[in-house]
Image 1: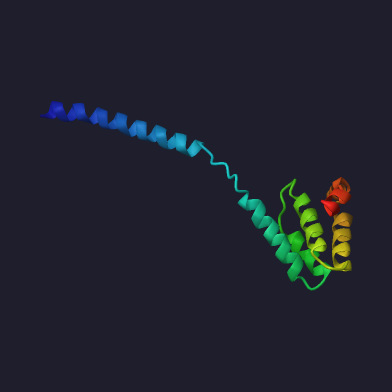
Image 2: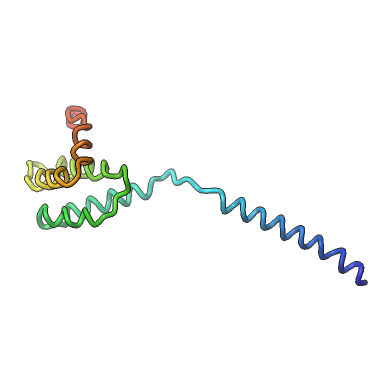
Length: 123
């Protein structure tokens, strides 16, 4: 009887090793999010911050608290222009906010320079 028990134990260890290997492979696989939920949440946060602020200085402070990863600065520029384009008339609020960010970091100024405004305005 002791011989049978010893024979079954090594097989159990082999099965445990196989399960551990499968778990390691699953942990190494990374799921790519193609729905861009992080980008959508960032844009929502920027939009709500811009729209809920009393003046451009408050909006600037709140937007600076949002930790943007390198490369995400363009989203702030895009949202600022989209918010401005939704208004029936021009509001200095958006211009002053854009100016403030351009003065704070040259990246924002370079991003505004990249825009093709006629294409943006006329479709």
